[in-house]
View (cartoon, each protein chain N blue to C red):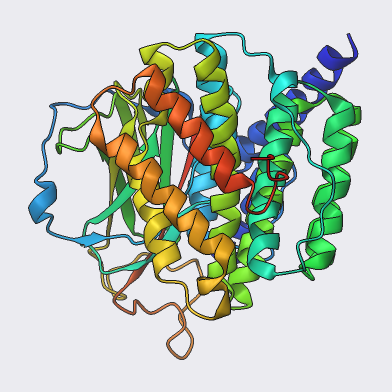
Length: 167
Length: 284
């Protein structure tokens, strides 16, 4: 299955699961992050519509500031849609101490949970990595289709997306 | 009973979709995949070896309301203060601020589980979106808000209010109206701050007052206002809001724990800011 229709199908399903909200366009990295959020929606987490996304060089850490409130529980979920790329996410307080209570990183998506000890600005670190070149990729990682005229070739940057939920 | 049945139905629908995704794509994550981190890490925020992302996501009022509900039992109905529709001349910056405040009003009405008020707010949101030229984008959300409130599906109403604001902001950004997009967030934040400070003033505790410790967001809004260009930047209402933000910042940045008097001041300042575009001005 070509990864683009697959991701679009997942995005539609996840958006339905999150209450039928619809974006005017599909951001594939955000779709991956929302995919990771699905099991937690079932646990009562309300996933925000607003989010962060962009492109980044592999291995270059990103730092995102965000206001959290003591008394709420948060999950942050990150995703990348590039085949073969991986992503990690961590959370730190304003002194740089890690405050993630649990986390996971599974290929294209990752998550971290936090229970803020104080109401303040926190810092979420996202790192997207990709070590393989086009020749090193498996057929599955290429999305089963052979690259055509540069399509599917790695261009030096990875897409990334970050969403969060609270309860 | 009706509420339970509909909540179950929504949960069931979500569960079915989640299970279907899991069945089709067995490699997907499950909640049980999460693990406790091996060892606490520390990073140097003053010398971070990467990129600081500029974008600021402003929390919706419902995030703060959720904590307040855990600490107390506020009478959310008393917090609803939907003003009469007023004509402030169609100035787009004020319309954007008002839009954000109206959405925040909707979040208050959801906490109160007040379907009648939510319906009124849903209609007002649609009217205002027509003034902003965004009715076609907002109409589906507005109708969904009204429908969900009739069904007493409060989670769905919250989702739709968040989606409404996001749709409007994204549409404004596509039209290169980033300033207006930021003002929508600011309008929502000020309305949320006013109702929260009003409740905390009524039954003060340090735990509740800590919710107002948001210097990063105030700094973000101040920067946003100071970077505004064009005629809106010098409009008296925008200047008054800039002054209000500076006063809020002085109180929040100036003390470790916010006292009851601090909270009262925050309430009065946020009310004054809202009177520039949302509430009628109180007689001197």
